[in-house]
View 1 (cartoon, one colour):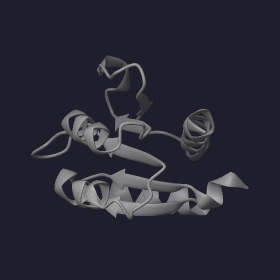
View 2 (cartoon, helix red, strand yellow):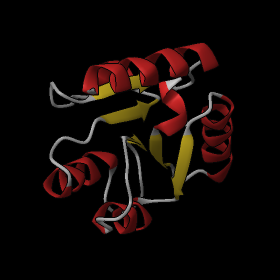
View 3 (cartoon, helix red, strand yellow):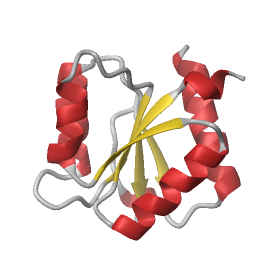
View 4 (cartoon, one colour):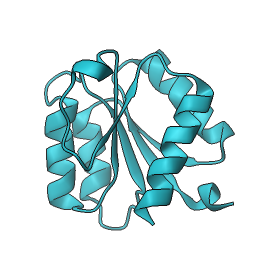
Length: 122
């Protein structure tokens, strides 16, 4: 199963929401790196030894928001797939090669979205 090797960086400032997302992704047999905001995420992204298959980030982060983080991430890792999670999914504007999932989302919706992104990135 390809998901076992896939590593997802989850960036979410709300501890409870982050814990729930991480639990779901780990249940689906993904390896998960956790960041509570952009600064912590950039530590992972700037480490060339850290493999990351997908970054899932909240749009509304304190300080550097999710869009700015995505822009920085793409400077460091130009081909990194990015998934934004937002309570305002229908109204946020993201680059065409990035993805959005609306909050709240179901486990099935998250699984399907993540697998779809990872499959198309191969």
